[in-house]
Length: 423
Image: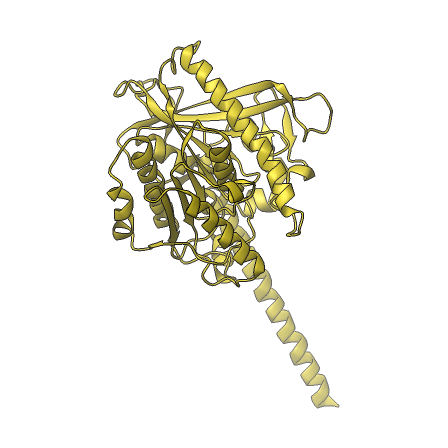
């Protein structure tokens, strides 16, 4: 009996010690997450020769009702971001990564754990754009690239990519849509959360996925057409004088990530203003799969080699192959970045907690590619592709990419992840 009592007491004591150790480890982890949240984070600097300016607008398409809004008769607003080659004056201020009214709304939406413990403080994220700076006078005008975010992701999630492309002499335009972007905050105080009908990121895989995605893409494509129309007006007469005559709207490209990549392919099919397009790790949807493309097009994919290949993955591969085969030889490109993951292409790799990223890497969600290397490869692929097809650079520059970046492999992997946005 005495022996049994001693065993029980020993067990209780061991459990108590383990509980204390677990509690101490939890406290240390929370402390690390809290300190990291408040630590400043500098995004990778643009690698091109131009300084980068940034302006934002709110444009309203009076011809369209926002069908995703909770109330009828709400016109389609867009929060528009423009990055461009600039010549900042000494008095020019640096841009905020995300406007303060927007970052506050996002923080409330995400809640304490995601916003405070698993993410950086966005007010301390340092990007490399100058707010409202004059456009560079080194060229008369610059090619335009529309940049589409993935699913409901924010345009700001692709700041590094946008800044790098602008530093190579492009005007980069992105936009967020109320009730389709995960959260859209406007300067007048309005805040719009993504509606369930516009949430492709959490939609289950089903026979209705194609219809769901195509319907959602049609709204993004209508936005893109409207934005290009607005750029024509701004090009003809910008009230500030900043952009008058600066957009080369004969040289328009589009690049998108995830569902944004699918949107890019369908937009190039639908609108002849598209001169070149790029799908970054997105499975295609829409009748572009059946009808094909004639413009130069580039599929840049993350590494799906370790994922299970099933019927859905084979369908995705066939759909990409069908689009590639429709593009004339010498104008179609497909490459995979070894070790990359679906988040490699956005700022999420930099603005989420490294503890979270470590955990995701351990469970196989993240690949082994170092984040700055991944975004550098992406930047090089994007600006090189558009250099070739919007600026007449030699096509050999595309062929040279794998020799400059050994992680780049010609071709795409057969398996695909579920296309989740970085939010």
